[in-house]
Image 1: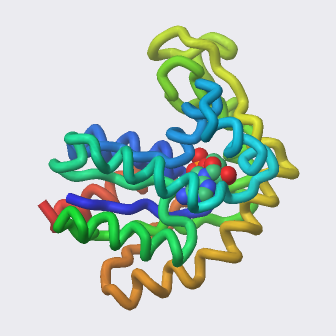
Image 2: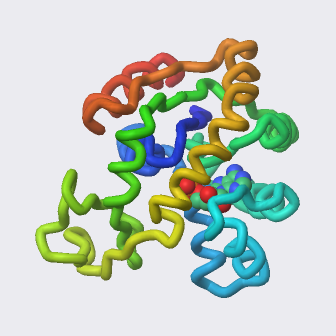
Length: 216
Ligand code: AMP
């Protein structure tokens, strides 16, 4: 099964992708996570990407495409994958089609997590991430048992640099600018499925899993 998750920052792509990866036994590929790993590791790519990420801007395609091609070269994607955070532009959608067709693969379904701005800002401004295992928490919606400590691995929780209100609004503006063309592209391809992501995470996951079941 080859899936893409679209949606504005804060729609719950990360949470849903982690749930889907577990339920459907698929590789979870998050370009945001891959970029943050490069930033944390101080790689040349990370150093360059960081400037864009901290401003809420898209990292240039020349950097992201190479990183994605490398990830697609790994064996775990053969059994299927969920792409989270890519594509974000029509250009990236076309690049993805090329990468996949070179591997004789094609997308089965693209999930669009539709979410409203007040919900997004509330979710992102309270989001906490584990430095060690990447688990997601929320200051009020899903607080960890111990303050700023991960329930799963006891790692330290932190707030992402780009989860500050001003940057959130910039990221949303960037998203909205690109998304209409992207949705249109997948609608024409007849593979777009929209889910309201303002609902509770478990309800959203159930709907996605039900739909994904058709592609097993
Ligand atoms: P995310 O974790 O998906 O919210 O991504 C965090 C940041 O990483 C974004 O605001 C961008 O700066 C960068 N990023 C992630 N995915 C992409 C992509 N497909 N193209 C360009 N930049 C990206």
